[in-house]
Length: 449
Image 1 (tube, one colour):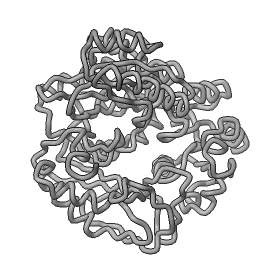
Image 2: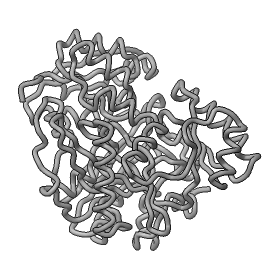
Image 3: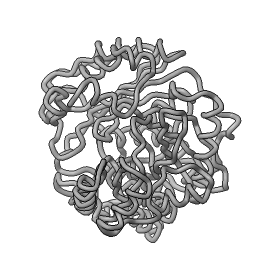
């Protein structure tokens, strides 16, 4: 790999450490950036160079494009890996990197723009022959337009922001009154979060499963998928636990959905790693939902069941290499589960619990992986996302995986702050989860209001 030898990681926390490790194993030098809040982060010591880019507020550091580009130029890097979140799906940032002749380790600005706007992505999927949820034909500009669409497709409906993600800018409506309220609330939230108040409407798929397919695409026209992840365990559209493969799919549905995911990626001219997301309804039908133009938080479960290092593949693709495998080479072995360990109190409406970790004893054993930047003495910041680690377990089948994850969670000691570990144990002990009978409302139905 000769296209670049020095990479800047435009992110923080566990994903920054994850990328640093992959680069080191490939003989690439790394440059970490950090805010003053993260000046003592342990992962900075593993980078070849670390550069401060601003104060704690992410708008003045991790989201500040000029500061990151300046750091890249000072450090003389040839490539930038954006991780997930922050600027990872920012088409403008990718374009700035290109104009500065710095390789953006991700899709092109054009591909990010094509799939980053959810309404455009829906249109792209529809033109590719991939099923989409019935909804508005384009953006909805007024209350009257919203009412017309809702009456055409029938209540209940989902009002969605065209830009962004993470569950923001989304509201459900069951009648005209809640439609008007939801229309204004979704638009205001989207404008505040993404500086884009554009919204669209689609029929609400009630009690669906959330199933996503991991995509890899090189710059030579090859697009493959690495199977699916079931991300149905969510709270307010925020994922808590993911697993691969999905207990809801049979081989034929897996084949069909995987081919549809590849079609969407090909239609978008997509390169590098990405995820095509679907909603699976109770009758066994599925619908395209959106495409994420980045590496996902939950990528380790796919790595565990395929044996493929997704970050290394990202680096190789960005260097112009061909994918190291073809579709027929992909094999799913066993089952994997990931639990997101957040510094939150599930008993207090998931209120963040920043503070200092006084004791940290992680689990171990065969097939147990912990992706984390935390340790005893680490101070969980109130400025950033509350996730302090991802616990992943891989076993020969799903029942064994559930048992092993329960053991690993019981072994995991984190003191000084509240975490979501007790909630995960409750989930794994629930008979419906053990039987694989869950949907996106499972957490709200059984554990929180």
